[in-house]
Image (cartoon, rainbow, N blue to C red; front, side):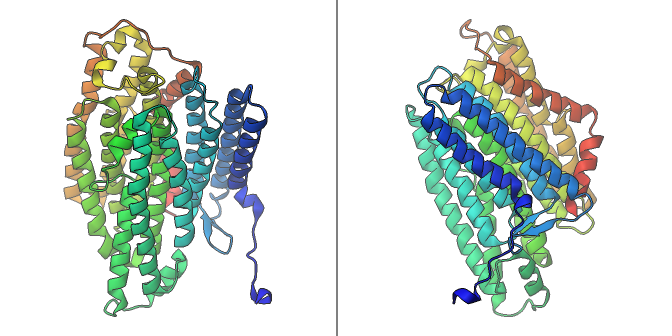
Length: 492
């Protein structure tokens, strides 16, 4: 039996980002165990260096894929194409930024953060595997690595009851979502005879749509959509989002909303547009319904909240809906929906990192000051921070000359070009309604009287993160051409 087993050929150089992250996670644990006296600074520096190195590896692969349309690895189980390379850059960049935020968040606490930095790197590994998977089993493994890391990160503040509650809720509901996804994979395998996306395409191309396996396939696709909708927090599978976003430490929420969403959305697009391209008429209505539900529910529920983290949580539901608008457009021939969705993920990842970094300053180490009243008068207490946060909020609202406007305009234009006029109109109306949410926060910061005269401390790392987020937002808003050109090739 052993003689019949053939080990897959592995090109280690193409797996460099994953290997760098894995070696970095081991090194962080080792340094944290042996150098307890000054491990926080060392492990943070090491985590940032490892994440940046892996992001550079992703950028190199992006440049390579300008002439080669992707590369299969490990017996075709992983595909490194431009979407995967973009995911590597975004996920690893988010890990580096969140590592800095965690260092600032833990300043003055007895925690050294070694476990958190390690979980950050393992979460990045899972996210990359999820985004680059060309096999449904590998996709599930990446999803579980990412999810388990996020469960532990959400419950990492052991002295805060809300953090423990957030981790438990995320774990329980995430387990249900993973079960739906795994059952969907089993049914798809039963209908097509393979879990490889390439083989699924081959199997569906030669199969009539009236045989008995058709029901298995439709139910399998539906269960896959349920699992993915939970991971991207699309309504009506978003119920975990506000509680988990509010209870988790703010840096963890930033990583969850950026890297977690990027990995899940790229996997969703790869599975639907690549694996089930020939069944587009079956999954397009479901994606249409998810997109409409997400933009409507996210916008309407956000304006009723009085906690800023819950506001941003429902805002993330609405943003997930806008990405799904681009995915729905991608189901039509000749559409640039994939490119617009990729552009939206880039813009939103930067915006949400900067936004939660701003919230972290006001919330404090215990994340207790997150109500709208706690942001009252921030323009007088910290005018620079209030101005930066306002810029990021305006970008999320889609105000012109910001990256948010470019992203929203891109997905709506894709829907219009695909003649999905109804979903485009609904998205535009939802964007107008959702703008009230961001204006509420800005009014509180600039016009309301402060409840106290304390000046929140802005640490250097947080200032750098917020400054870079604002600079990127305005750069894309004023000069969007370079990013538009970069994302145009994603659909290949």
